[in-house]
Image (cartoon, rainbow, N blue to C red; front, side, top):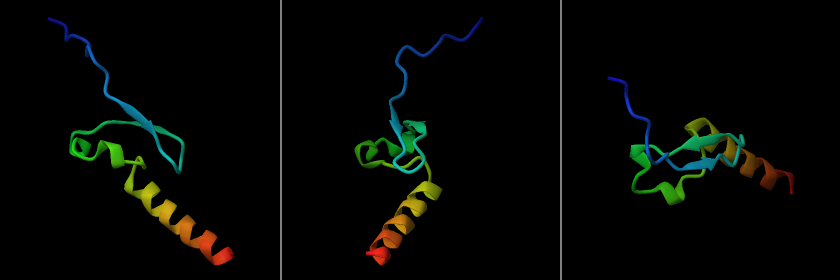
Amino acid sequence: MARQGRSNPKPEKVCLVCDRTFTWRKKWANCWDDVKYCSERCRRRSSSADSDAADAS
């Protein structure tokens, strides 16, 4: 018997650093509204970019 397709797709967001779409994960169930980045790497790149911009001013 074939598997049924999912009736309700998982929500998606766009990463603020790399502009890729990423989907909801169960570990983000309690904080989905606060999730901004697709990965730890993008989160780190964002904070380093913020500090570089502050140094340039």
